Image (cartoon, rainbow, N blue to C red; front, side, top):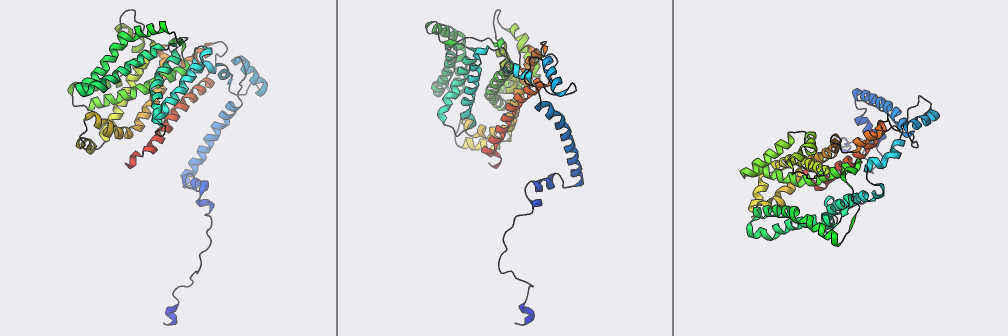
Length: 438
């Protein structure tokens, strides 16, 4: 081989060089800033304008919030302390209204010696819902989930313990009707019997039975009327009740709208369209003012119970449409696969169709729940003292007349914690199920 063909490259490395760290401009926060904030002249300009706006807002809000006054008995005293510390031109928050009235904002006019009862009920609710939210927990905890609503009702409203127990027996009757009569009379007839039998029991037997048991064994707590409840506790009671009850009812309505049975289909469609077509505030006024006209004379129908019923019906109509969207998005082959396995309607829905449809509907369902929880503030228009209503009551007193922002910031923070938690759990559930890859 000639010398002209022996050397084909100028230099050949015989060993690899040591690996070095990438330059700062190509990693970490510097890379993110360069790509997202400083990539073009327009982005540089927008970044500078945004920083200016943020600095302007924070330079006013942070001193107002951080240097606020926490120890004062009235707004006048709070202003006197402000003038002494920062001068008459100083602008600081008067957090003293929160430190003095936080119990009222959270519990309304609930008896102070009984604050432990709603707190314990809320802790019990968290323990009861945990097995549903996190599948890694033991299934035996679902017994706590079933018993929790009745125990929570007893803790919050008080009275004899036999009332919730007798009400729970009605659900046991409904389960027994489906379980034992279904194979004999058919699924549809068993479902109708499971609805009618508990209703007859609750209307005729439950009340006298609870009263008789209370006479023999008087076990209970001091009763608390619904009108004494308010604040954030009221929003939680209405919101949680509406969320828990509207989801199964919404699923039933969605299946009814998809049904081939003429009567069931039309009743579901009429219910959904009528409920969705009227604002929630109108239904709340209906629950507050008009519902008594349709009840027998002398009937004492608790206002909070009426509100919970209306809120549940209103939310269930929206849930029904969200679930119907999930059912419509499901491939037709899934229905055919369930039929090919020889499953009847209820088993195919429970085992094949609904699990997939609910996965698709998770964002819409959680969005409806968040909207429902925030809409509980509308009960202020029918005389219930939710946090907004109590803020008006606090500001109506001579001690705190003229205070606004501090109360609304506290109320908004409470709502944000719960709504943000629901949103984060929705993202966690979507990531866990990984529905987009199945």
